[in-house]
Image (cartoon, rainbow, N blue to C red; front, side, top):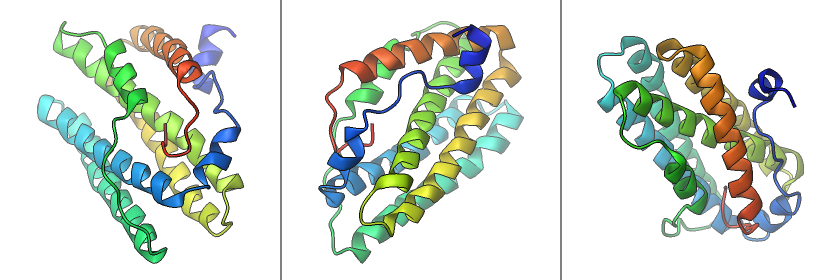
Length: 200
């Protein structure tokens, strides 16, 4: 696949089709992990703002995502309550941990911003892909609309993080590094155990 097309399409490795079947076997587990993913997404956005207060457009665009992600956390809590389920303990996210290891450490503030924005974009893109699978296939069927709403939201976040990266970093550099992230993410996913109690 040529680089420009790859950049537009995003993810290069689809989720293993067994994942949805495993996830629906224990809704308490997948909803717990989903809740903490939303919480961590809000925290990541707060950190980006704290590290880049002088970038006015970034602050203006990312601030609402903090509110939205925290709102998602509360929605997942409400879904747990509705089903008589409990929020379990937070788990180690091996997928995100490996993406963090891939980040370029040190360097200029622009480099650190690019790494953080692309990491966030990739997590949102993968979340969007998995929410789509849940919205199409999860049982019980009434949860499909629940996840459809999350899918739409994550797609918007993914696009915003990419656009913000191109606002502050030369576009060709963003495209090159994004292609590297996509390649690495595919390797990470291919080597992770398929688990139904994890969103990633």
